[in-house]
Amino acid sequence: VQWFERQTTKPLILFWEDTPHPQDPSLKLALRRLREQGRLYRGIGVFGWEGSSRGEALKVICDKHREAVLFALRPYTDCHNFRSFHQLLEKQEYGFFQNYDSSWKDGLCFLYAGTQIFPLLSVQSDMENVPAWIMAEGVKYPFGSYFRGKLREAVLGKSHSKCDALSRQYALWANLC
Image (cartoon, rainbow, N blue to C red; front, side):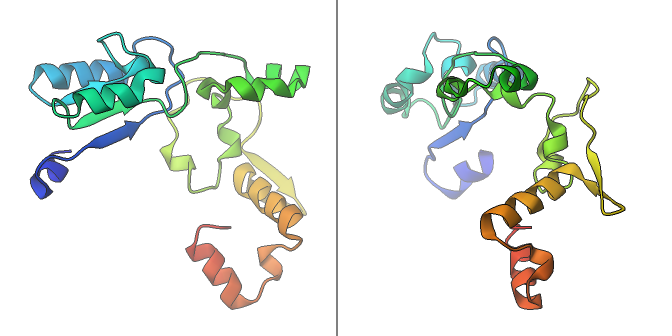
């Protein structure tokens, strides 16, 4: 943020964080401390301390952009509709997608193993009950990259391993495989 402040007169930064915590996430606590140190930061909804809701984000940003350079908010809503991945699969009621909650991805690191997203995940404190590796054709693969490859093969009708060298290099460069 300080770098942006040095580059322009006064930036307006929207920081999106998809926290699964319904109350007092660590980003909210950090924002409050930084604000007390004189930083022009403001949280909205679950990240705020002034009582705003995520639904009021546009109004808050328009009204307060002269007082803050950074606004932190969730990308969707402040609703907390916790269900575990296994509960979602058991009931097979797909209306739950109407009330997305970021906690649904908790405990699903195996889906990201071997992908570019994996290093961005939080450190896991609980053991997952799905392994992060899969055996296929006598080879051990990270589950996420294997699953992604199979999904792409099903959608595109071909795998990158069967592509010509130029197409494969482009796909690797573009993080498509």
